Image 1 (cartoon, one colour):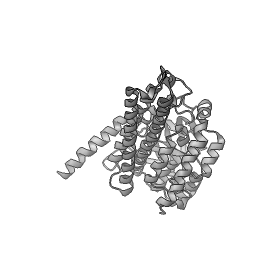
Image 2 (cartoon, helix red, strand yellow):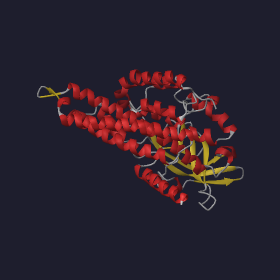
Image 3 (spheres, one colour):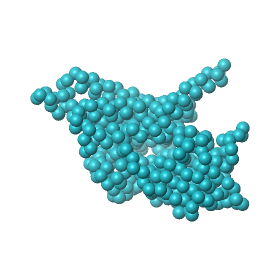
Image 4 (spheres, helix red, strand yellow):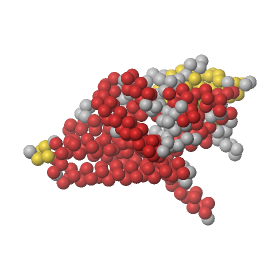
Length: 387
């Protein structure tokens, strides 16, 4: 697989940074007010290759690895998180299932269209009774002749109202000693029996659409089974989620950097009694805590990405990065509102949006509580193996 050199990646990163700061940031209010990414920004993102930056070059993507992915994610986090949501599932949890587990035929059918943005892929895992832990999955797939018939429901599915392809996780048998019995299927959005609900009304992240998805006797051919193996599903989910956790951590760092920058500008220019509030030591202390969190988060993300790419650690480090960086962002965003005082609570001030957007990052791709279980349990199991 072709690798993008640091020299070639530098202009890509610079181009993305310029796109975010000059094209997207000025239109954040529009995105929030309309609850949508403008069509011209979507077209620009597609032309830049952002729908497939993490898809291998042989399938029409840019072929960036996770160490490069996180650098872009830190830029995406600097603006409305809906921008990243628009193409995030193509590059991340949905696209990577195909990249890592799809058959050659499945890759040839879908990956180039996913990379170009022609197809929006959606990752249909979460259910009302199975969120951060896929083992609780209830959606079922039953073999009927050469076909599979899927029944069940999913919730909070990102890009569901826009999706052309759903990457659907379903149970094919009860979990047993041989495995969890979870398979993954490729289900086009126009398949009879697949129904997408109304757009969810969320606390934040306007422009990032989610919805329920129901499957009623949805029939798909045998070729829809990812990898041609019904035991690959759970592994596909875990692999995609672990990679996605590092990406979300980087996104959190970008958002925290923006909250810090907004705080510094406000502290340097807003006055209280004729004195810039940044001259007050308690305000400086808040800025110091924000800066410390951002710098620590950035180092944590880069370290986790490097460990993932090298194969050294694809389980504990992603959870550490996701846990620390999303919790850090919550604190930095809260301090940003505090620095701004009453104006930080006003709907058209960036830190108010960041405060609301940030809350979701501690929930999806595995809650903070799940990350703690993965980290703690993983450390204990590693020690017991040594013993």
